[in-house]
Image (cartoon, rainbow, N blue to C red; front, side, top):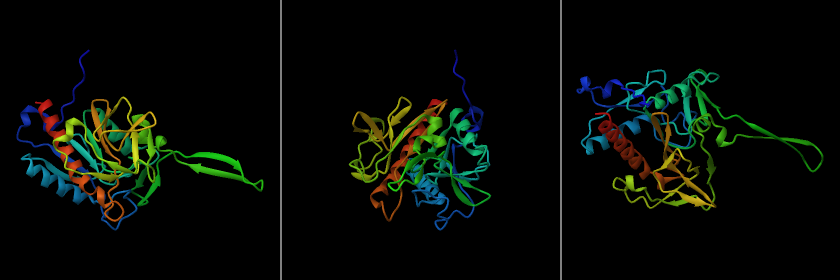
Amino acid sequence: MIAQRYYYPWRRKDHKFLHPKIGIISVKGSGPESEEIYSCTDIIPEGWKEEIQRQSKKDGVTINVILIDAKRSFDSYVAILNPYGGAYPERDIKGNETLNKIFDYVNKAGLFVNVADIPGYWAYNLLLKRRLDATTPIYGVDKTPNGKISITRIRPFELTPFMEKLGLRVLNTENSPLTNWKVEFEDRFKRIAEDVDEIKVDRATVVERNVKPIIKPKVDGQTGLTPLFLAGYGNGEFLISQIFFDNKSRPQNNKMKGILTKILIQLIKGKSKTDK
């Protein structure tokens, strides 16, 4: 059986003059003061654009970086980056229009980058201009010592729509022996990684069959965990960083911004060679 191939405009041989494009999802008015849309990151869309442009120029690679509305078609972009960490702009909360669009794009050989936290834990409602829980709650019922009924509501990471669709399990490593993480990169990415030394890790994903670690996993019991990885989906991949970017509480993680950018550019260069 011949695998189905998808050719977006930037890949076609008759469009050699076109350079690959990266689309960075941007919501109007989502500057640093708009805390409602950001989750576990303080880097605005323009900050990622500048970093990608700086690094691609340094690497001698021509990449067009464009801030885009979530309603725009993703098909002509080699990669789409969500700069909002654990939140993403959703046009239709009930129908998950944007979420489904993201997964359709990746299935057709796209690369979707999520820069921090649990992808899609929050859905930012563009009409209400506020973020809403996207994760289905689980309710527990118990009795208090005085005999009253107590109802507890939790939202497991695994029930986040992104995680469910990718079949991933995520652990909270905050304030645990795994929080302080000495970084070692897998061989494929060693040559582009700077000496990061130690970072703070608050979330880490269990290494399953469709997870390719970028940061070497740590073992918790018999489970391998990594905070930075590729997750395959259909003909494409998700590049997922669960590392928090917060200059006040996580200054030691700042170097990971440049490293994540280098990894993205390396992946794009690899895709370009594959599609020639």
